[in-house]
Length: 204
Ligand SMILES: C[S@@+](CC[C@H](N)C(=O)[O-])C[C@H]1O[C@@H](n2cnc3c(N)ncnc32)[C@H](O)[C@@H]1O
Image (cartoon, rainbow, N blue to C red; front, side, top):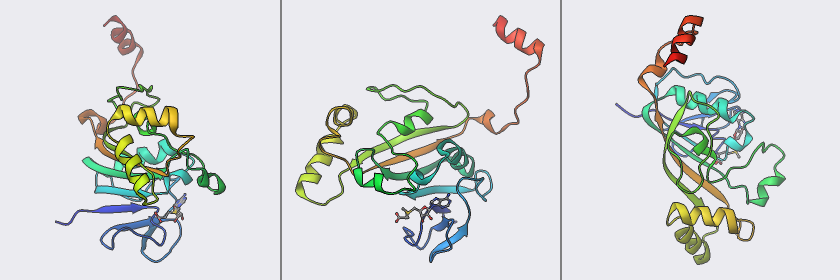
């Protein structure tokens, strides 16, 4: 059976004709028109992969859309994200940009922490495994290729670049490959703990 792949926020630029294009504008290539700030019109664990390019920076509720990605993608399915890096100053001109992204933005949604910058978790009910992160310098010069090779060599090289050099040599965008992790119990209904359960949990 063919994989079901969504291009979220595809605009008129869908990455492949085989993908299902999702956008709020009914442009050419858009198959599903919806607002990404609301629940996505796809069944739980029905999607193999999501591709989303230069769209998440337009979304107010990042945690909300990631929760929806986590819900609709099958366990182990991938989410490929491309977003502007915070040092990409051109991004500030676009008045619809709500946020910028750093090398560690999606670490906040992962159980595995980066060895060089350990971030806290603000939400515990969704989790992605970070397969790959890549700083992209975009203009296709030899210099950009060198920077990419140098700063994507290791997690430490990326950490050093972002913390010490990013305002000197700006980065254009970052690519992330995430894998959806679903705990077996996460799909079971929650129940409120009663006083006696709270008391016994505390005793443990
Ligand atoms: C900068 S364009 C990127 C288009 C395409 N992915 C590309 O790489 O060329 C951002 C897209 O996100 C869509 N978008 C922004 N906010 C949205 C929302 N709340 N709901 C649905 N689509 C949204 C816009 O309509 C636009 O097509």
